[in-house]
Image 1 (cartoon, one colour):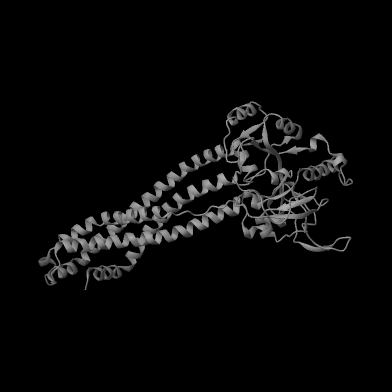
Image 2 (cartoon, one colour; image 1 turned 120 degrees about the vertical axis):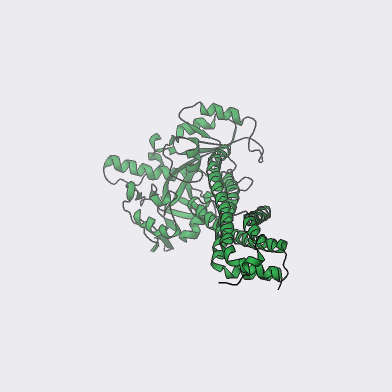
Length: 467
């Protein structure tokens, strides 16, 4: 019988204690790996989602809120800017592009972004990566809509379908949505499942959300205006995948209709572009990029333009890259707390290994004495105990790596679902090897006390016949 067989039999004899200790080690190792990997991959994903803009200008209360609401669609923006202010903004610097966006409507809990065609021709959703269409094209006129890839996948809408937008956002559209809640959210805002309808010229067209109704917070369906799906975007692995896009003028006309009906206290004829007034022309943000090379994320005149715009008290100016860095500096503080907790759990698991073996020593003294009689030296007994600890630590670390892959996948799925961000768990071999080695060493250190006890076991005393 070799030493490894002796150790395995010893572990099987105490299988409940062994399994419990291995699970304790595994949980600590998994928590450490998940925290280390998701922190870095999450930051990369957020940086990617900001696209190639240099500045984001809005009327929000803070620059961080502006970035979260206008780029990652965390909540509907609260403070709009007037169109004439945007026109002034266009003249204040040598912009490569200045693209207005208006966010405030939704469809089945997905945010709707009203913008201009330049959003697709100039703005890049990820640095160095232009928009691509899985089918169809960008909107070319009013009341045409382009679907993000996640919207098309989860609603089943296709080119040629007609849909009706919801005024405002339901709770589900504010980042609290799950796959199972989409139908409920749709019901709450007064929308209905798609149904077939025939247009005047005989074409068969699916219609979604065709009936009106009031929902929570005064949300209602813009049932006067149907939007035709003209394009479906290819996945960008950003928050834009869960948004719909239409023309800015379409949004203005819809809300002008609401204004006119409120003023008339009843229904009015369908609003036309000529009936828009200055009050109707609002945006929630402007995406800005200075003239520069494509790969240049910080042109030399960026600080000067940033300070110039910030002097205007009516504007909130944000550098998306800087805001994401600030956000993750806050998150890092929380991560360090969780990482410290994980290390404490790992140390506690080492103590569990020590206690498990220490408590079993009283029952194993006779077994050790027999091994000594059969020729095992004190050093060999010492080493057998340390090997037993090392196996427990290594097994726990391996199980922890498996749990980390599962946990990281679940966490990235939640982030993808709520924020439309793709966070790929990046568990590098270096992290795995270091943790496997560190956990094994910790387990061996924890086994020193039981190993010393085994080393000092008296043969004569423990082989004495029981009275």
